[in-house]
Image (cartoon, helix red, strand yellow):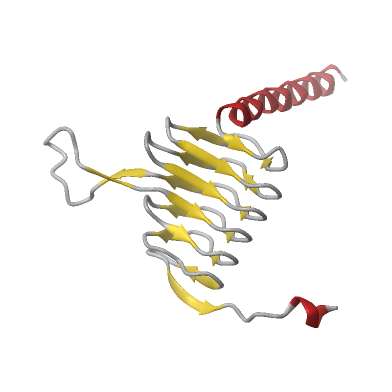
Length: 171
């Protein structure tokens, strides 16, 4: 009985802790009040701008990094799954890591409205993902994705264009 009580108290404290952290993210970055942090261990960091749109969410264990002078923008109605990594800066792989500072590539990341980003996806600096696109789980996005397409793989490649169904046809 005491063990169950202790577990409930610890779970409540954990939930409160994350609510406080996410409130701080909302205050520091441009996070819509209608944006949902969907789980624990979601990290927003960096001195750049992070804008998270309404009716969008990000799953647990995800990371969004915005370097100074760069931004991450997630549009309205986006579904960002768990374990997603979004970076505005990364070292150049062909660099000589013995020479400091190691050169890096930096750029804004834009995810347009109504996108679905699958679990375990890495989105590299300078990438734009067009509206209504899908990035499959376990993908590495290294270049821009046009609107209305489904991409996946390492590196992510076009799987196919979406088969559009008019909203009026459904009604």
